[in-house]
Image (tube, rainbow, N blue to C red; front, side):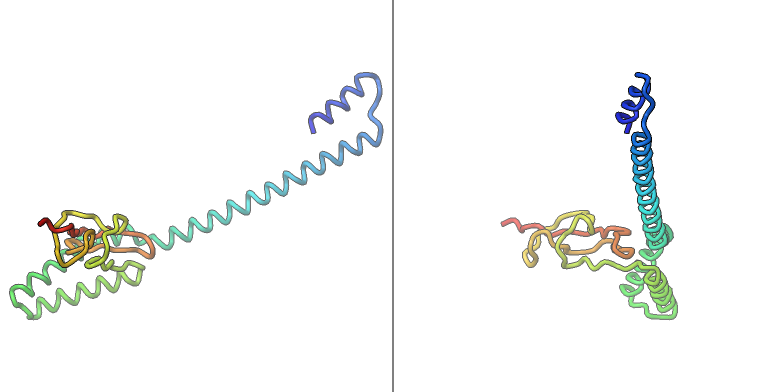
Length: 173
């Protein structure tokens, strides 16, 4: 568009006024350019609006992540208490109460999209598991989760906390 304007300026500097046809062409080019800019601006606005909606939806979907992450250590402690009570052979009202609180906490987390990952016996996946140690195992293939030291959790389709695991290795002969 700038080249055409320069042509008109050159024509006017030589003493000739631009003709009506030239001015009409120039006006049409400007109109077309403004229309193109308008369409581009509308598309940019719509793309930004859609991106903003997607980001807000993601934020809503994962808003429980912080609270859930803070509650996981308490859940771990409840599981340790239940394991200790089971080892001691206790099944009284205190153990039942701890089990009930544990179940309620798991249920509340599940309502917000937080679920426990099943890791034991699964192939080791560094995206889901944090290998703490390796242990030779004749009955399991190498790189299989032998034991879960700390449960892993997902929130919807994202890892909230990776499971801390012991991974099998090839036994040494």
